[in-house]
Length: 155
Image (tube, rainbow, N blue to C red):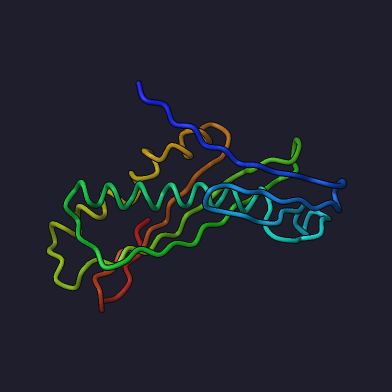
C-alpha cells in the first residue's frame, strides 16, 4: 500500500473579524471569514478552498479519464458553485460543477459518446468527492462541444 502526505501551514488572529495566512507548496494566501458571513473578506476562505479542492480534483480526474478512454480534447473549462446552509448548523449543502469540454473539431461520434460517458463519472473517482460523500450533494451539469461548434448541454 502506498500512502501520500500533504502539509499545509496556517496561522490565525482574532475571531469572526480576524484574519490569517495559509501556506502550502503551491499556494500562499491570506484567509478570513467571507463578508457574507460577517468577516473581513480578505484573501480566500474555507468555503472557496473546499470548492477549489473539489473542482481541481474533478478537473484532474476528468483529464486522466479522458486520456485513459482515448478522448482527445481541445480544452476544459469549469465553473463551480457551493451552497452553504445554516439550517441545523452551518454546513455545505451542495457543490455543483458546470464543466465545458471542448473536443477537437474532427471528433467522431464514437469519441463524442466516450466523452459523454466520462464527464459525469470523473466525479465518482475523485478522492475529494469520495471524502465529501454522504455530507455534501455534488452535481455535474456538463456542456460538450466540438471545437468551433455549438454547445450541447448534458443533463
